[in-house]
Length: 327
Image (cartoon, rainbow, N blue to C red; front, top):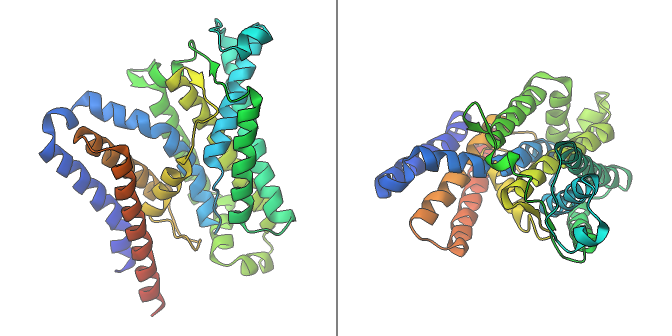
């Protein structure tokens, strides 16, 4: 498999999946409503996958994004409830509180800030303690999830008025899709047209060579993990808006879909390779695959099996392409 075929494979697979569902369930799949639903459901995961792209290209991994989403959403919801004047008793009991716009904006910013701080924590532990990203984020996955349960004794916060990021429309298009597109545009620019993006590729290709070339490797890695934290904070509020509540269990096993979108889209697990366009294709492929399987009546458990096989196939293709390029 040459490099061009490797880059074309995710797109070809996406076209195949769309064509297959169009043939099998044309009346329900190929409708404007369903297409809009798929894009809306892709938004939060896609935004986090954009951040994960930087992490994987830098030869890292972040297993804590699901737990990070949980704690960010809980803190964001708590902030907007407090800023809206809710009493502590009513907030903790899950009673509905009328939210005001400034409080919703403030709560959203708090969620992004908390996500950024969680990502900063991961980055500092990885660089200062000289620990593997897998180990650090495996530990922080447990830490963040535990904290999300502790915040309100495992109970959710009700945010019935916070719906704009899910059902709000801008020029006839859901706000979450606009946010999805804006995030990918900014991240594509950062990755492909800035010094920061070049440094990320260099570190992922060969960390020692990047250091000898004068790149502040630790600083760049801290920025990378902080970035995915910030984007996870945004994704957390989309989830909160979708369910009209902040759930301490939100994001459980979400890291699989986020990482899978990057790997399927062409990011190499060994680092140094990947594009934002590929991650976008990977995100949409998983979303359309889940959507079509659901329309066919397949259970969520079987969907996990199918996606697992696709991940193995994508990694195998990457290994074959890498070995042939080296030969």
